Figure 1 (tube, rainbow, N blue to C red):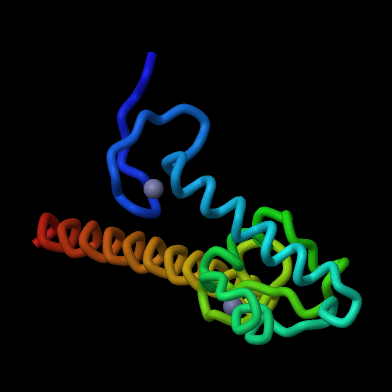
Figure 2: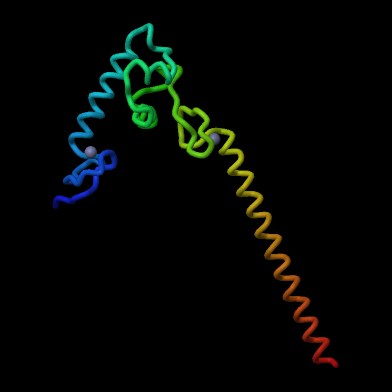
Length: 140
Ligand SMILES: [Zn+2]
Ligand SMILES: [Zn+2]
């Protein structure tokens, strides 16, 4: 069954098969990939920075990030490749967020849990007090 979708890149309607982008965009991406890869394979360009790669190849920065995220361009081969952390934008070479953000998120989660158990405690205490108050009222 053919499914129609909007291309993630150019927004044109296309028949969706295996990709989120249309054929024209896919071809363009493959060309861009070849351009970047050819550039990086040259020994003198291996350690090129992201800025140098973008300037030399004219590739879209987001597309370059995508290639690295998908591991088509590997930071183990080209030491200056990175893409931004989804949370703070720091350059990273694997996963979605940087180490700092991972630590931060863990702390936030722990704090969140602490707050929740505190709220639960307060709720219990309030319930007890209410019960008491009612009991006293009944006694009177
Ligand atoms: Zn497209
Ligand atoms: Zn981060």
